[in-house]
Image 1 (cartoon, rainbow, N blue to C red):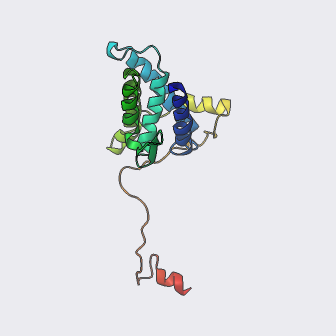
Image 2: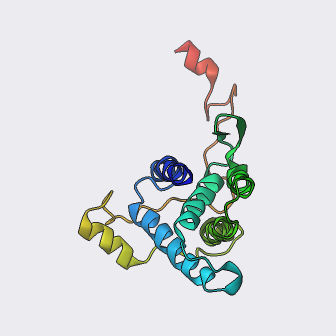
Image 3: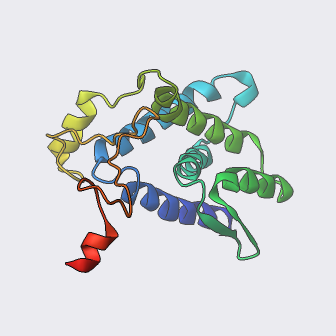
Length: 187
C-alpha cells in the first residue's frame, strides 16, 4: 500500500511541478532530480542518515519542492484532512511515523528538497546569486534525446529580485495617461 501511495505522489506532484514552475524547463527539472539523487547519496553516507534504499527519499524531495512552489494549494490526506500544501511533507512524515515506517528516508528527502529550494530560490531572492544553475551538459543531453521542450533558448523562469517591476495604471484617473474605466465605458 505504501508503495502505491508513493507512485501516486510521484504522478501527481511530479506532473504538477513539470506543468507549473518547470514548464518548458525540462533540463532544469532533470537537473533538480540529478541534484536530488546526488545529494541523497552524499547525505546517506553520513552514519546518522544511513539508508539502504533512497527511492522514498527522492519522492519526499519531489514532494517538498512542490510544497514550496505551491504553498497555498489545498490538499487532502486520504480524503480525511484538508491542509495547505506547505505542511504536506510534515504531515506525510507524521503519518509514516504513525504507521511504523522509518523516519530517516523521509527526513533525507526533506533535507535534500530544502537544500535544492534554498540554493535555487531562497538564496537568490535574498540577494545572492543562483549557485545551482543547470549545467550546459544537461541542456545538451535534453536536446540530444529530444526530451521536453528545445533548450536552445535556455528558457529560465525569472523569479525577480524581490522588487515588483510591473506596470501600474491609476484607476479612474482623469489624466490622459494610464487606464481609465470612464474612457473604457464611454467608447
